[in-house]
Image (cartoon, rainbow, N blue to C red; front, side, top):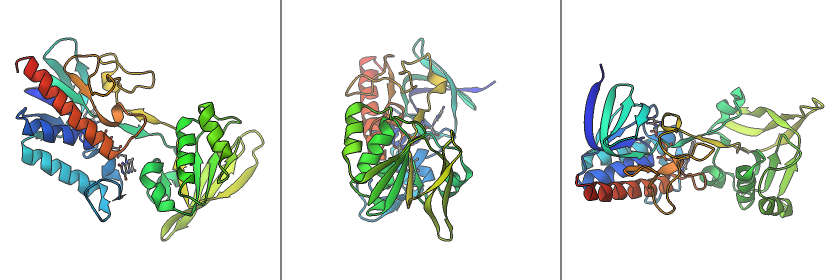
Amino acid sequence: MSETIRTKFLIIGSGPAGYTAAIYAARANLQPILLQGAQPGGQLSITSDVENYPGFSSVIQGPWLMGEMENQAVHAGAVIHHDTIVSLDLSARPFVAVGEDAIYVADAIAICTGARARWLGLDSETYFRGSGVSACATCDGFFFKNRDVAVIGGGNTATEEAIYLARLAKSVTLIHRGDRLRAEKVLQQKLFDNPKISVVWNHVVEEVVGNPEPRAVTGLRLRNPKTQAEQQVSADGVFIAIGHDPATDPFRGQVECDPDGYIVTRPGSTVTNIPGVFAAGDVVDRTYRQAITAAGMGCMAALEAERFLTAAGH
Ligand SMILES: Cc1cc2nc3c(=O)[nH]c(=O)nc-3n(C[C@H](O)[C@H](O)[C@H](O)COP(=O)(O)OP(=O)(O)OC[C@H]3O[C@@H](n4cnc5c(N)ncnc54)[C@H](O)[C@@H]3O)c2cc1C
């Protein structure tokens, strides 16, 4: 039988959103419990250089930054458990969250479980991830200033990333497996009007090509699935832009999610359709997907939870 742990405020997730919520909630004396899940530190724990998180004039490392956030949350008084939630019951208060190790009974909950980029699933893609292969143009585009890059995908994200990268890169090649983009028409027009961007239609990526020492991407081997014809494209950077999956499987049916699984919050807040349940970071955000925006939303979730708990007499 699992241990039952009572808390005023449960924070699920240990990325920038979760740790920031924990820092603010602990300083408001809510004695929060934060659950780290399978990836302590969240997405930044698997990257290296971070150059756009404010407050640092030199390059910092993602795992170091997340370690500092954890230390700050603990220092403020948050209690951290290395547990993963498998199901939630939000039908009555207090809410019940079932973890792999314990059951948590909470008066308010912040869901900060983030999202994962979809990858193509190629061995070569995994090999060069962080050494030329990225899923975030805002994060890594700067490293490819005046160089040649490729973007894989055909939807809004791929189109936006290609346009963004064209501000920095020498050239952008968009590679799409179809013969038309799924992006909004206005975005498509911007893309087609941009002289730095060219499109390779009807091709899939067979292999990311590069050098092992130092590990660096030099291009892509593409295949046309209809004709089986292959071609090579030169690129120093490859941006995979085929979508993200929010980590909401255990919460579906309990809290309102959109058709893609992102938790729906009231505009300008972290309030969900369940009073006392808040959501912050990439789990609600399909637009910005940055550490700083996730941290900002984590702060909002803690402040909104504090007001909710006060109004509810806790
Ligand atoms: C390779 C890479 C490089 C990046 N570089 C940058 C950069 O340079 N600058 C920048 O601003 N952004 C960068 N980003 C984006 C940034 O990491 C994310 O926007 C940010 O981490 C989102 O924070 P979050 O708190 O919403 O969620 P995440 O960081 O995704 O964390 C989610 C947390 O939830 C936990 N979790 C999930 N499910 C459960 C569950 N069921 N129970 C308990 N816990 C759970 C996970 O273990 C994890 O701790 C990068 C992302 C990647 C992948």
